[in-house]
Length: 133
Image (cartoon, rainbow, N blue to C red; front, side):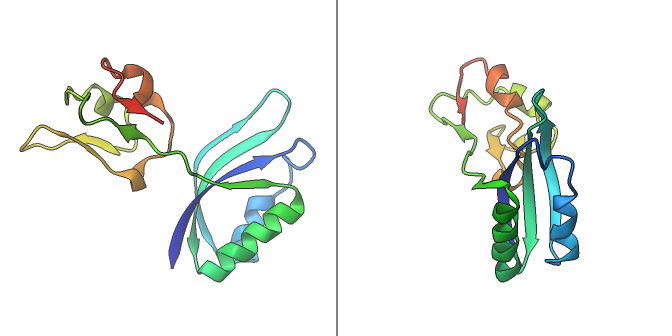
């Protein structure tokens, strides 16, 4: 079983269709919606994490693109400049998934990429601008 984070973009003509339902029903995948939004123009964006067999995930991506959904790997990562970071911990208070934590022994900032949902709340709160996408 593998995991992949994907960004799905839904055009307005399919935003109301149960497309993600078929990922479970037809491709036997588990998925977690990490972030979702619908723009005023009724276009949708969703960050999801898919879990399942590689072949099933590949087939589901083909299904999504055939349906009109734009699929991109979630290539964005939070990058912390360790030379700039002062380990103040302000970002940890805003991190709802606890991807950013302070080590209790060293008081150094730790980042768990697998827990991050790319909400970007940490970007603006860093007093030394050490966090970037």
